[in-house]
Amino acid sequence: MKYTFLIIDDEPLARKLLEAHTAKIEQLELAGVFENAIQASTFLLDKQVDLLFLDIQMPEMNGFQLLSTLKHPPAVIITTAFRDFAPEAFEFEVIDYLLKPISLERVLKAVHKFLELQSRHTKTPVDLASDSFLLIKSDRKQLNVLVSDIAYVESLDNYVKIHLTNRTIVTRESISTLEQKLEKFSFVRIHRSYLVNLKFIRTHTNEYVEILGKELSFGRSFRKIALQRLAI
Image (cartoon, rainbow, N blue to C red; front, side, top):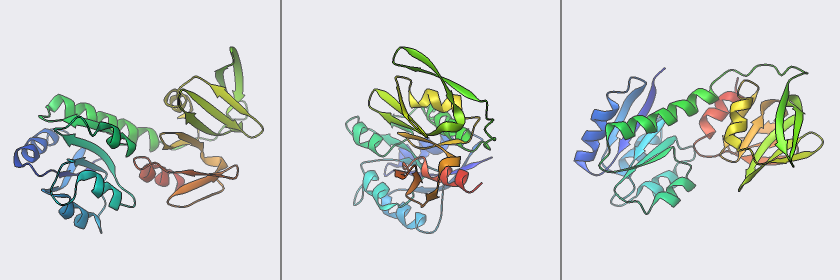
């Protein structure tokens, strides 16, 4: 499967370098190269792509402003000469943050992150067996939790809440670790802070899902794949 992408950068040499690097990655298909964010914004009005290689400092409209205009932005890999924008960039849940000059090795590493994310969330869910358990460390104990009772997982600072049908468990395990343990079941990551059980979703829009009476928002980089999973 090939994933379409755009290169958006006002520096000609940077655009050419990214074109050369990405041409070596068979899973990617270049859909367009733009020298400013306004051109890219116009393109994205009626076309969809899977990934952006996006510069930040550009005339008239910067990369963050472009992302803010997109209702359902694709996955993003930032390409910039400035380190200082990293905190703001990760607020947009970007896949990676590449500093110029960008090496082929660094592009490959970022694209591998993107491909891994795609792979995790496009797997077909399987039915949960009634006897499937997950071993969870909580409060110095090992708990056997019935997987079919887990509605969603919520990441909060340095701990995680596992919301069951009748109680909540707090653990120090990361949400990424739990995602790996639950990926063979009917769970999907919809946000960097939320991993949800598809079977507990009562309603959903393009902005959120409703589980146990709570609205959980989609993250920018997770929305597209999560909505695809919901359509299965």
